[in-house]
Figure 1 (cartoon, rainbow, N blue to C red):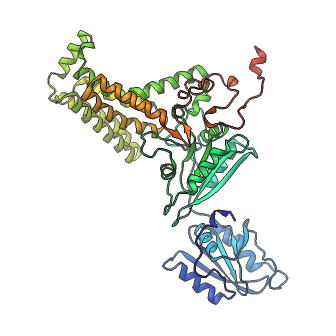
Figure 2: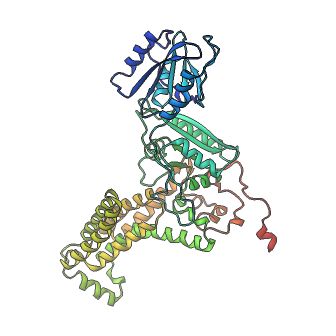
Figure 3: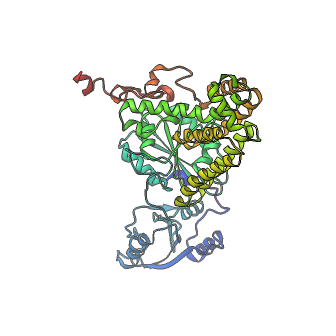
Length: 501
């Protein structure tokens, strides 16, 4: 059995009695008011001994219990000598002598076999909790990449990653987090590539987490990140096994949290959030253009409403005369200043966005599209909002939709409001203050101790090949230095492309 269950605090008496008449009351006392606890008494045909099989209904596979445990024990004949090995066809079969481990194993879907006259129990691997089939990721769609997404079972998620990296250097470290509900956290890494200091730092942070239970990977990331008060995400959360495998090959660590359909990737950089799996499935000039477009969309989504407010309030002289007349005509009947306009429209947009997410998919899309059109047209006709402001907010929303990472999009949404306040107060000076503050903050951020702004600060020109731009894959011979990999080379010295040239 994995060692992740060894840290469960033992009960007052950890000794297993030899008599079932004492064992069963102990089980019922530990799991009082637990109607899904099943106690199945039986006689073992091989040894003619009395026994009891204990398991929790819903966490176990009834087919395994019936065909691989109960049927061999009750129907298969042995030598008839007490103490002989029991005949069972279950895959996992171990002796247990600790009540603490028995309690934890039962809660993790194992079945426990107690045999009258023996002071040890048998742990049987009969796990079979409810789980969904592997489906496409809902947050990270792909045109040319894989259409498999992670599920809520860590074993399946690890198997999906192994499908991409079938190599013995893919190692795992398992940690149990939580005092009340133990959550199995698994760190995956390539032993000959990943920097061991980074791995040890990540493992230590996870081990130091002291909480009742971890329910999602997002909770874990918030507990172990370097800067908990920063708006910017310091771990990449992905639902795609191909993305996780790609990051592993770059020397990063992947954290798989049981019961969570997403995994964490660390260390990461700011530019990592603007990359997409499809970038490596399309021609490199197109991938480069898309990456630059996403970076442009980031600044547009963050600064465009604030820029509009600053221009209209303080710097209207930079607007061409014809456009200024159109703008004046549009704003002539609007009773609110640009800041109030922008706040009203942005809050309306956020409400429509949340409504579209929470409602069922067909209804959500309808609410988002129809609601946006109807509300936009209505507020303009009512004279509450100008036409220009509707265009600005719509273009801002489109820019935020371009960004491939949801956590970064959420950060941009909050930054936008802060910049709007600065623009209303100081105009272009406020925008410059906001930009400089954001850049300074990015330069001070770290992800697992590594510079968040790399390869822009510190400047690492060799990493620009696969960050700001994406050069041809046959020229990407080395891994990025942002994760300090042990082994930088990832391609041979020669490729067919070079030989042809």
